[in-house]
Image (cartoon, rainbow, N blue to C red; front, side, top):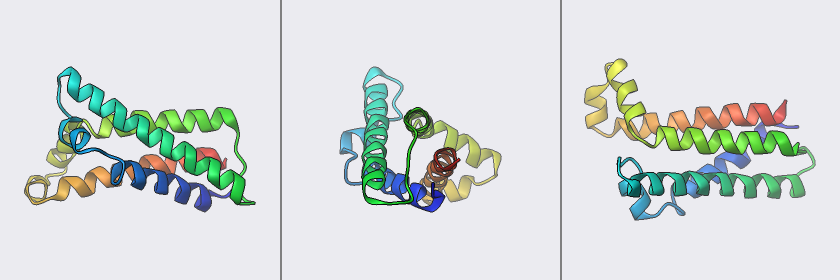
Length: 132
């Protein structure tokens, strides 16, 4: 199984879920502490799982170097959903940026970059598991 192909497929799923498929409501409320925030967060995370599942299925059908194990796919998709939901609560990124002494960068748009880096790190780990 090809790590590069798997990663690209997962990254495509991530980009689709984070940008064209994320609603304004989800983006505005996914970190809220109330029920509406949790619903927005979990719906957004489920969208990530669905788009990554679709991308992996397409890759398995279209690419010779992508073969998948259903239990590993399920574990990888759960990992993607859980980590995405956790990162998008926003406090983990804020806490990291405080720890790393990046408060000024956070005030000038840096949190979005740290957020995306954390998501991509989670995708790399999922792709490695799928490729193993």
